[in-house]
Length: 69
Image (cartoon, rainbow, N blue to C red; front, side, top):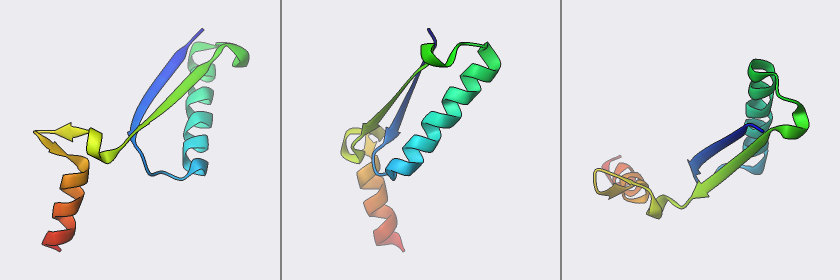
């Protein structure tokens, strides 16, 4: 049973998430040959305030980009 896990910063449209699930499912089916019913895809969305790199959250980075413009 293949399991694909994806973590994204929240904020994408449900249609975009659905398209991602479809594409990942198809990629696993086509490359691994797993039956459709056995493929699992999990998409986790993390708030921008809870995801950081270099001690700066994505929310802070985005706020700084707006100020710099």
